[in-house]
Image 1 (cartoon, rainbow, N blue to C red):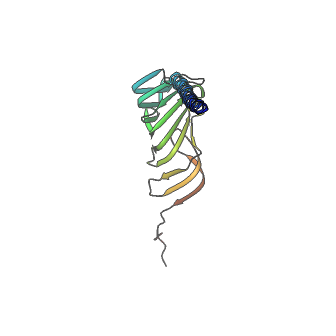
Image 2: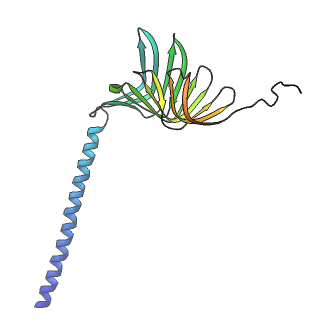
Image 3: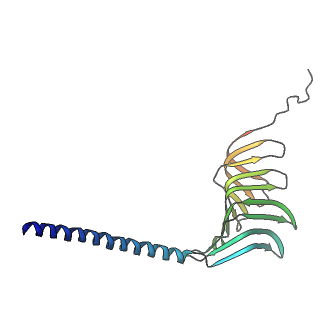
Length: 193
């Protein structure tokens, strides 16, 4: 009889362990469901396609933002996300003076900022090309800045690298900290011997 009791006890212990695993699995599943439902709340309320936003001052177009997709997030600080690319064209007297493209953008309307991320490329009216992984357009102060490395390909062939980039909306003039570069030097400056 003691043998049967221990065997019976073993079966009960095994059944108890299995039920603990099942209940703990249910608990984990409930946690996952709660996490997923919280993510659903964070999802954007609005999805727009082929978006064009015009920024103007005194009825004059100052900038145009174009994006194939825009997601409107309504969290504590609402923002708009452009996950499939963005293009910003800046104007002076209705003439384009600078174009910036990026793979990803975020507009923070309350701060009057547009953050551009991933493969950011800008070209100014002088023909200089700017490349970085991040540029931030501060619409309030009409400045463009970055703390990330920036590479500038000058129209004359010079290449400038640096960080701490800041410029106006036309990308000229600009400042760049910690600069290094490759500069073309005229080997025959015109001096006679």
